[in-house]
Image 1: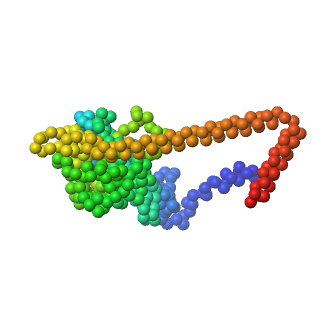
Image 2: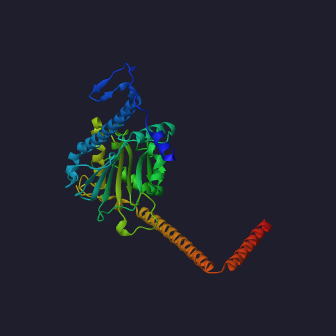
Image 3: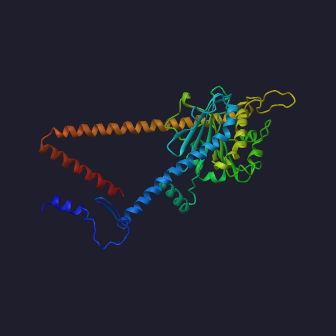
Length: 388
């Protein structure tokens, strides 16, 4: 018997047992007979497939519900701030765990990106991995997240500075994920609750932003116990999140105010509304627009100035110097990497040319050159041994 015939015989399932000794449940229709007791394994497999499919659709629905509940709870307020509070059709969905909203048409702000990053509830394997790994590694924490990324207009007078208030639970990994925050030093501030830390380049920035400006008092807003479970970080930055390979041209630079929150449940989606409203006020305070800026006098009723003019001249000079030093280092690193790449390309080209030259020689000449190279390498090895 040939190998193919043996393989076919091996793969052919055994004949169906239709003996009269079967006394279980049985269905017959014309020439067909169905005996459920003979399909136990198939039943378990079908149940597993159905459970996986059900898990997918239920998880997908939960994620959609949570994201839409939050944006619906905040959309009325968004509409008072933007001429275009959200793109037509509502949230944009990327897969089953990422959702986006784009808002534009507001003073001081070029755009607002509201981004939802949710747990993969639609993917049983990923969900189980995250859950189990969270039990093994106490530093590994996953949660539903919503981020509001305000991009300031180029015309707004925003300082070249990095500053943040961060929940202490976030401190362990935030510097690894945010290169821009490596510009700062981490300190405590008595005006804030003990579970928050301040990350700032200079105290002048912190002192100015934590003061009361018109209706806004950040320490008071962040002291609300209803906010604490959801707050993760609030950061002002003029730097990219990831370290660039070279200094960025002016056309690629932008300044941001970024609020990161744990996403509340659908039933508690309005819990963060007060904080979001305060962050919009902070945008105006930093930019010095909208009637409330830093230094607004209640008696005169005049608009205050933005954050940048409020900083001490020596602070602005130090901020400028820091960025000049960073750009110098980035430029040096980029040039060094370019020189190394050129050296590697040159060495590779030289090696290729040598190989082509050798390939044109006779076998005897090739052997002679190889022996000479072997002796040269041996002498180098002996020389290094003597030096030791």
